[in-house]
Length: 230
Figure 1: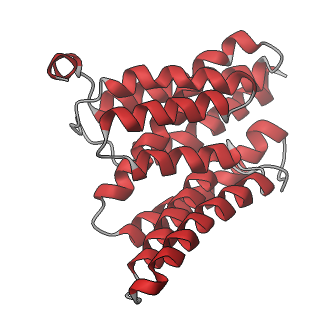
Figure 2: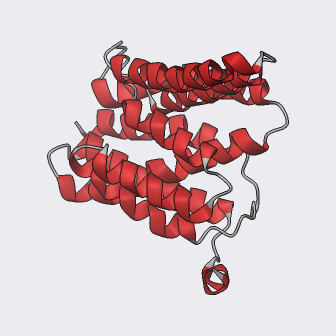
């Protein structure tokens, strides 16, 4: 572990920038070259990195409901941009990745709320079961709503949150989830485990709102470019 710590040279800002760069590459592929998988594969590492920091944000935020509200706000304003970028117009067919993160945060909050209720020892096992059911049901809801990454996305955020202070278990289980629960090229997302293991726990330059703004902004730019060239 001491040798690994010496290699941990990536702070949160660097990892988020890496994820954003590969996300842009992925979305260029999705919008302009939808049948070319080679350009989509590198982008697989982006989602787990963002999922990791969503879980970290939930663990460390001072106000979880405010954090959830912020995610909801940006999920709503991003949705029409997402629809136009990928489907050419407003649609209920699919929902953007911030909706996935919103559902994941709601699942974590509801689970914690249920398990924090002051009940007799007799009911404690049922509290645990109810908490796990909330995670499962909201993961299924993400799948039914066809959110980006669906139930896989919700479960990955849950793994990162519940094991946030257990280094090897967190990364091994998250990699297993990505390999065995994801489908198609999404299995390549397991590669994200490598840069995440190099995370040094530092914030870097911050960028609290950068991803929230960058996500819809780059989709809007890609949509406008696509309108011009087509």
